[in-house]
Length: 271
Image 1 (spheres, rainbow, N blue to C red):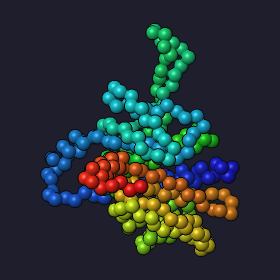
Image 2: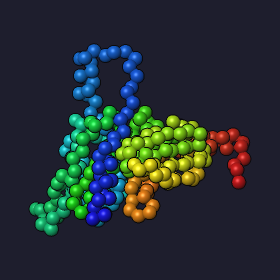
Image 3: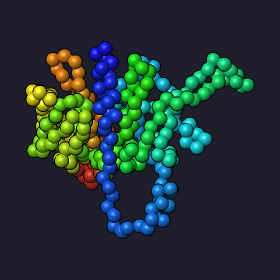
Image 4: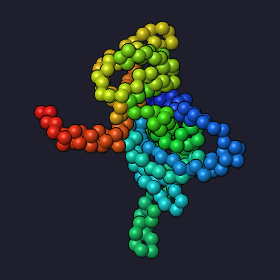
């Protein structure tokens, strides 16, 4: 019963959170005709999937794009794989099933059934992260959508997601911010270079009792961005921490190219 209650708390918390993108600056006001035309034409999405927890049996998941089945391949707490497709604002995540029956060519018959349906339009962004949270007892999965665009979630930033009933006071070096129960907030500090920063988090539960849940040093830089999840747990230690770190692979390559260029100009590499 405790496990079921914990899973339900996590699913309820995830269902209450979506990262909305900032509204783009409007340099000039388009006509209503142009706005409708642009909305109809812009159907492209970049989606990244991750498992909150791995299900007991990992399904073979796909999205139907036109007449093609695109493999999704979610990883555990990692949104590194990208899937590009056009959509009207919602998708069905499909599970591939392989039968023991053979087709006319002697190959096993394949079919697809809906694993879960996802509303993409709940977040004003075309670059989305999707966190899949399975409920092993009920054999269902919840899906939460996050803004993963460089505008709404820039590299060098640090976001705390609070899935508890406590208020979380956060400190990242000289910046302070608070995350409300079942809410999220981004640190006002944006890292533009590699920095070893002090990170502290204190939870205040509804009765006013404080618990220090994080006190550590962490490395940040402009090449990755971090989602930090605070989740409830049973026992004396009431909180647990998980994180997703998303690395800018293009930025890493650029940095490597720059270093190689500087070395070729006569700089001796550091030993």
